[in-house]
Image (cartoon, rainbow, N blue to C red; front, side):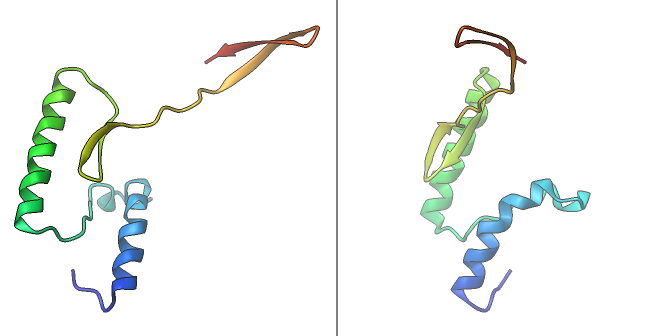
Length: 94
């Protein structure tokens, strides 16, 4: 894909993460990545292979960020307040 300006490229790459949540099914498996030099491509390819191996060994929530494999940040689970007694709150995790 060729874009007219650097600003357009930045906007497209910034919004690329929204494709997986698209209402159009044919966009859900589309991934965009900025151009890499052959050396960068090789380094990224090695990281992808390592990440696939680690996932097959049971590690979960791994992503590539800035040339490193990291664990995706956790999320705070939804909670329900079940009791409130004398300023104490008992929380039940779903």
